[in-house]
Structures are given as structure tokens and as C-alpha cells.
Image 1 (cartoon, rainbow, N blue to C red):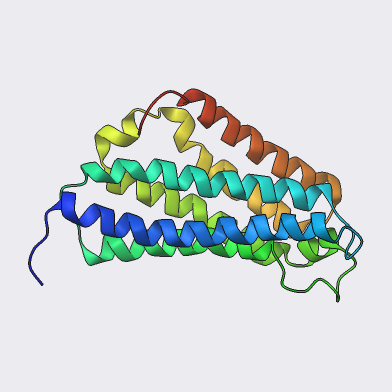
Image 2 (tube, one colour):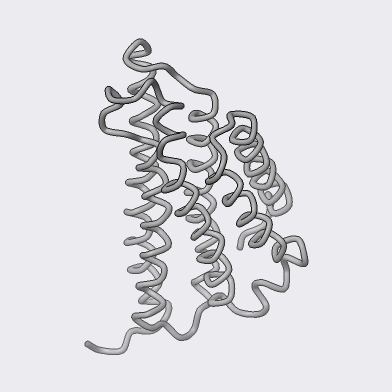
Length: 195
């Protein structure tokens, strides 16, 4: 294969990531549409709906933050594979919130709580993946975030461990509210900036 310049390669990688992110968004939106179309099919849950909102925002944020990769001067297959794995992990989070069949559960909350180990295991992985993604983008990229970015990994992992171990609805609601607040913080901080 001829050597492509970073400018030529980035759109191809971005298209693959965009397809995976698009599939995740589609799963979440189809689940919400199904709830609207058939509200009596299964018990709705504010906890489940809040996680749908959070992961939907997470998918959009991932897509947005990956614009910074256009500055990457050296592409490898390993970097491309890493980005695809990261996108697939986010897709799997969306899929875990979008069951094909809810009949064997007592509603969406029961489904979520019974699948929480998978969900929060994958969610914990995203904190590591995000840190690696940020390092790939280079020093000038991650320096602009400051100390508050670097506390996210241990803080996020603690939340995931607690949420894996507890099926208490209050703890689960606290976890999603903290994550939504964290997302709102970063959105407000960089609202007018391009990555």
C-alpha cells in the first residue's frame, strides 16, 4: 500500500469511527422510540433513561473530541485499531442499554441492574481508553485540560467499582448523576472551542 499522508488517512479512520458511533446512537434512539411506541411493553426506569442520555452524550463527545486527531502526524495500524476498539467499547455500552428483548426481566431497571457488571466493566475501560487516546493526541493536547482531567480516571474507576458492587438504586442514580454532571462540566468548559 502506498504511504498516505496523515491528511489523507484521517478521514478514512474517522469514517470507520463515525459508523460505529452512529450504530451506538441508532441503538439508543431505537430503544427510546420503542419505549414511546410501546409504553406498556416494559416498565420504564428513570435510572435506565438517564444512562441512555449519558451514553448518548458520551458517543457525541467521543466523536467531537476525535477531531483533534487531524493534527496527528504519524499514523500506525495500532493507533487505528485502538481507535476502533475504543469506538466499539462505546457501542457495546449503548447496546447494553438497548436490549433486543426485555421479556425475561421486570422492566428496564431490572435489566440494567442485572447487567450492571458488564456495563460498568466496559464503562471503566473507557476511562483507560480515554487516557490513552489523549496521550496519542500529544502533549500540547492534554496540557490544555489541566489537573481536573487527570483525576477523572481514578475517580471514574471508583464510581464503577461501587456501581458494580451495589444494586442499590440510590447509589446507581448517584453514579449516573455524577457522570452527567462531569459531562456537563466539560461541555460548558469547551463549548465554544474546536478541539
